[in-house]
Image 1 (cartoon, rainbow, N blue to C red):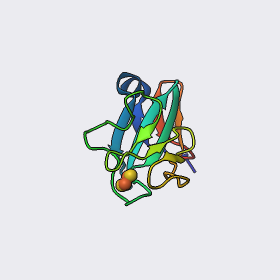
Image 2 (cartoon, rainbow, N blue to C red):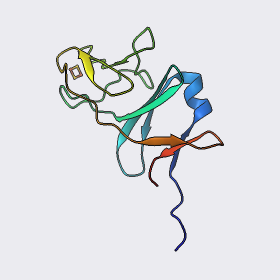
Image 3 (tube, helix red, strand yellow):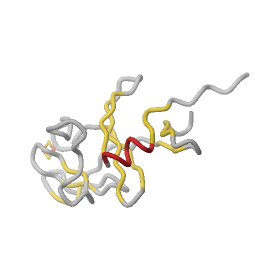
Length: 113
Ligand code: FES
C-alpha cells in the first residue's frame, strides 16, 4: 500500500512574511497559523468565548506586539505555544490545536498524514 500524500496547507516563506495566516482546509476546518519567535503553531479559528472566528481583518491574529494571539471580538489573548487564554472572558480555556509539521522544503503540512 502506498503512503497517503501529505496535505500541504501553506509554505514556511508565506508565514515568515506575514507572521499569521488564516486558512480554510479541505476538510472544512478554518484554522490559523502563527509564527512567534520562529515557532509555528496552528489552531482551529474559533474563540472559546463565543465560538466565532478570531480575526476582524484577513490574516490578523496577533496583537500589536506580535507575541500573543488575539481575538478581535472582545480582546482575549492566547499563548501561541499552547493556545491557553491568559487574558479576557475565556481566561483558562484553550484554542483547539491543529498538529502541523514543516518538511525540508518548507512545506507546512498537517502532521500525521
Ligand atoms: S468572542 Fe473572542 S473574546 Fe469574546
